[in-house]
Length: 120
Image (tube, rainbow, N blue to C red; front, side, top):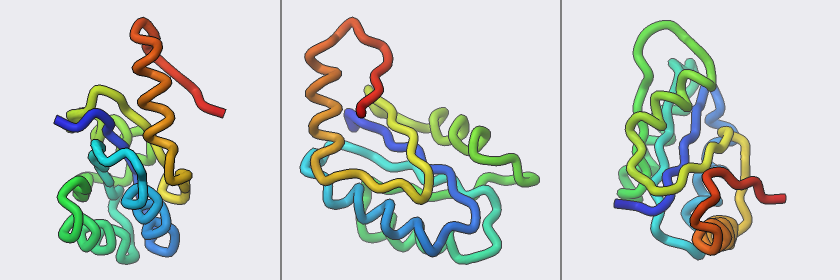
């Protein structure tokens, strides 16, 4: 079971999604999973996420079925399938510094009673 689940809703973001996934792959903290939930993109966002998933088994990509519902519904669907102890929500155009997950996990581990954290 991964310690961190990263949930990424996506809709027509193929031009930016690769950079977001690249910023995950380069993390110094390796114990994570990414759940990319596509909301019925008309571009190749889902195919791009599936290519990343084929190269890195920590990444999962799937199409949310039904009419377009938006990022919140995609986040909730991704969360329902997440296995991590900690959860981070990213948008499909967010980038993480290479040590982001390492620092966040260390901070949360130092504060076991904390249920929610925001990093500046």
